[in-house]
Every structure is written in C-alpha cells, then in structure tokens.
Amino acid sequence: MAGREELIALAERIADAMPEMTRNEWMRWVQIATRHGLEKAVRHAEQLSNDVTMRPAVKRANQLITQAIRSHLFELKKLTPHDQQLVLGYVAWHLAIQTLRGSWRESGE
Image 1 (cartoon, one colour):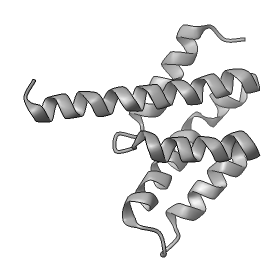
Image 2 (image 1 turned 120 degrees about the vertical axis):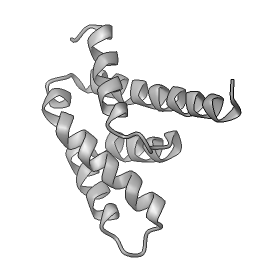
Image 3 (image 1 turned 180 degrees about the vertical axis):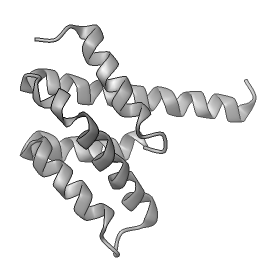
Image 4 (image 1 turned 135 degrees about the vertical axis):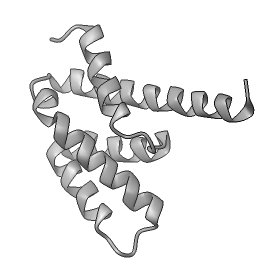
C-alpha cells in the first residue's frame, strides 16, 4: 500500500496533465474505469476521442484522459484497486481546485 502523500502526488501529476479537463467529464470516465477497469476505460476514452459524432469538448476531454492515464498507467497498475480508486478520487478533487483557482483569477481576486 502506497502512502497517502504518494497517492496525492500521483493524482496531481495526472490532473496537471489534463489542464482543460472538467471534473464532470473526469467523473464520467471514472465510473467506466470503476466498472470495467483502467485499460478498458482508456480504450473507451480513445475511441470517444476519435469519434466524429462527439462534440469537440467531449473529444478533447477523452483525448486528455487517454494521454494522461496512459502516461501514468504503469504507476497506477502497481497500486491496489483501493489505492487506484483513491488516486482517481484525488484527481477529481485536484480538478475541482484547478477550476476554482481559474474562476478566482478570472474574477480578479
């Protein structure tokens, strides 16, 4: 079992690799990953990123997910399923924080 700090650091690296990602799109993908596993979920995201019927924002989100998870898949696969879920949840929190920081910057605070 990895330490909490290591899991959070991994989550931050994954989230930082997806600067345009919304928490909602991420959570949709996490549901698929939870049900079907990381590798199948990444393949699904890759298919959506190449689907001409998808809206550009959805295609881009799935492209970012594919790239970020593939680049960290080795690290994720070394974790227990429970720790993988923790990391995916920490990514969601990090994305929410990024969104809040962005809205604060836009408002001038």
